[in-house]
Length: 467
Image (cartoon, rainbow, N blue to C red; front, side, top):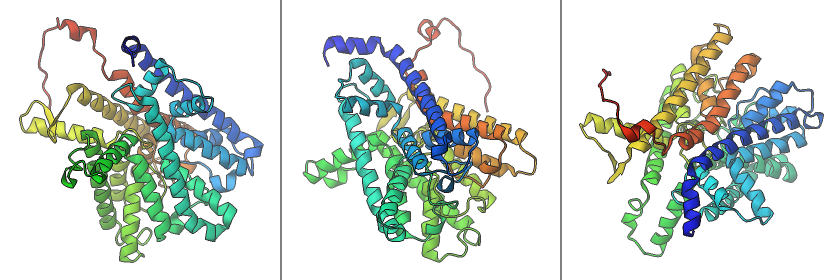
């Protein structure tokens, strides 16, 4: 990039950030309403559907959540299911990435301004190579989704035949990779495949790969290439990864193990979940339940039948979600890791938040703190709103499970969403939209901004009591 382009990018950063936020927010809204209209059409339905249900389905698809008020398998025709699949793919990749795909197809040159928008959308550290990175993201998505579909065919083709089996494989591979959790099998998601290793392992791999983030992909691949070419010793492979990648991998593995152990112990004797399974089947179901809380939404055991402590623990996992730069929602694993490290630093009496020989900036910490606080505020506000709207007979833990699933764009439900009033469903739609858009919009809005008073520093400092 030459000096003129660099100057343009720097001078236009503030306006471009706002434009990126506008494009993302308005773009998602536009796709949602268009999807709602398409899903409301008679050609999309096997039976009449209320517009609120069509709109809710569009929201949950574009926001890659998975909460539904109807049964997609029986409600929608083939046309409706294709619309559903397109909405999920757009929601998973993002509006900006999908628009870039059209630019590629039209062989239109990506301008400097559009490159800055892409840089902001993907959180890239530099402008150079951003178009190449987007191409890698799109190509990687197609390869992984194709591989997932191929693995699914091992189960679905023998069960449903060639045409229907391939269609089911493609749909559920896209839905799993995009962390949407929407299925077209029936009312029970993957419950009929709770002990099926092909479906379980394929789904788990797709969820983890997409939820860990594209930036981690590229970092791991690059370092693996160096290892294969013997450019670095094998013992240095993990240490050469970027701090972001290390935290994403460590947190993802830790949370999956913690979730699986907790569910296994809490539900071991529950006959309505994993109580009747063999030891190996219990372990597989527990791992699947832990992984699906990474914002996937598929389930192999009844979510409504989980013990209260399991629902509460899974709600925490759903609130955390996956890692940045992928298709997952939540406040993100690296954000929680950073806040934990900052707390640990304070307890030890330190000033700088350090991790693995690196120092995390104060601005980075503030951004993460804002993301968590706003997400938590939305979570609590939505929970209280639904508790006020709905009758007292609904257990609070079920409402918490539903709202955590919505704001974390997960899609797991304690069998509550279809039975909520339209007002509560509107609350969930708002929460899903904020959950899909929120972390990105917060980063674009707050990161790198300096309040005018910070430059002058004319106000005196004063301590307030905390704790």
